[in-house]
Image 1 (cartoon, helix red, strand yellow):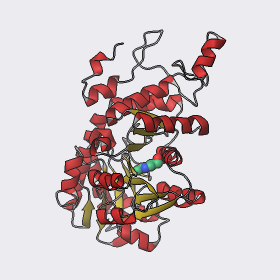
Image 2: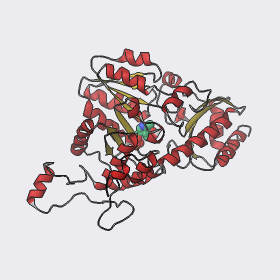
Image 3: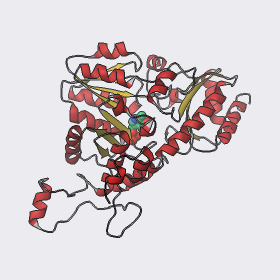
Image 4: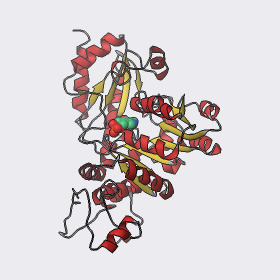
Length: 397
Ligand SMILES: *Cc1c(COP(=O)(O)O)cnc(C)c1O
């Protein structure tokens, strides 16, 4: 097939057709190349392929055609030059760090990032003498003040989990660039369907494909998107160290991308409806959803996102007892810490996803005992509201 039809294509067309290959059997859906290695016609061809003088696959730790489809498609959707897929979101972050950082370097990271990201920075990178400073996502002065002559990487996640704070990607990128540091954005919550950090001057986009890119809670994977030059270094790291994505998982993610825009719009619409309904409830004191006009970051979110995503959180008037009674009262929503699934999930961050934070850290991150997080799935929103009514009924039981 010619590349020509996709040169000016829109997001949904790219999501469905970019990277598509068609093999010997003229199949209409991408095949899964379940093979660890590839064969050659001659010793000369093998030598040229291994040397990189000839295009072609050699071994699936280095590259695999099914994984390449996913990489091309995600790169196009993020508006990046190239993409490297990894075995999980966490291995994408580790890969990025070990590609761009060396011993003695320094990272500035927003405070409310994914729990394992904090552990990776604090427990693993520190072993390599790489230091990390955590700053408030919204406070640009803190980003600026944290920079040292050794700062090489800025890392942030926006909107934040679970209280939906929003970071100004363009402003944070400009502070990073003034110090010759790269800005990496974990775009897990929005996905390129709602937010494209590279267009806002970020240098690298990181994904946990496990969440919305699959969208049905089935497989683990991750990805990095950025310039050809940086991705070449990333690819070398993956080739040697092996956090490669499996072909089957890549196939699942490529199928997920086909419906990404539709799903993200639907997650966002349902989350908005539920956030509005919860805001009007007498037992709820606060709803954190950047789609609500009352949210302090609403304007910023509206300027850099096309919708507000599927994750919201809210606080119950009656503290942890009420939060737990509500969670125990719902019947439809799944009590699990995962998100980005067609199935709606509910959790109590203070005792699960953020349970290891100290009381001070929890307070600072807005993780109160009365806080409940809902990652809104794609069920009928009327049924989700009915389920919340069950939760509220359980308070008086
Ligand atoms: C889940 C998640 C990760 C880690 O991804 P895995 O695929 O579980 O390794 C990183 N960042 C965010 C925001 C996540 O939600």
